Amino acid sequence: MNELVMLVDDDDAAHTYHRIMMKEAGWHDERIISKYNVDEAIEYIGKQLEQPVQEKWPKFIFVDLNMPAKSGYDFIDFMKTIDTHFSFPDIYFVSSTKNPKDIEKVAQIPEIKGFKTKFLEKEFFESLLE
Image 1 (cartoon, rainbow, N blue to C red):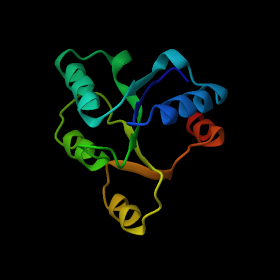
Image 2: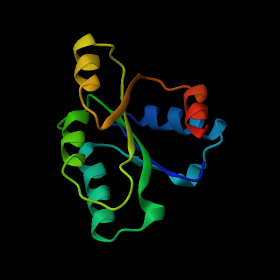
Image 3: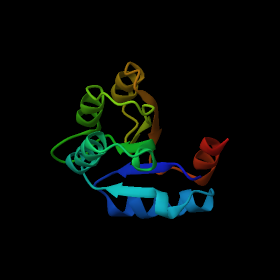
Image 4: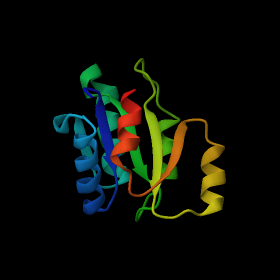
């Protein structure tokens, strides 16, 4: 896949694992960017809004739901406020928890494409290529 992908997770192991799965599924490593907290992700998106370049706009964003300081919910609250001529990214919340309240809450947020439990497997990433 040649689309840009952003991983937002405070866990370095999650970044490493998901990169391996993405590469095995046929995604290009140089098109995967890692952000380790919500503020880093917001800063990246903000820069792209200031100087829009299609090749630097993410097609997919995978956001850890529970992180220190700010959560995936904080990220989606920011994303709801942006105004861009690019397509809105396909955003997936990823979490190690299967809390039914979180799953219900996420289902009510139209900007979220889905809720996935860590760790995402190669087959999931392959399905996004289809």
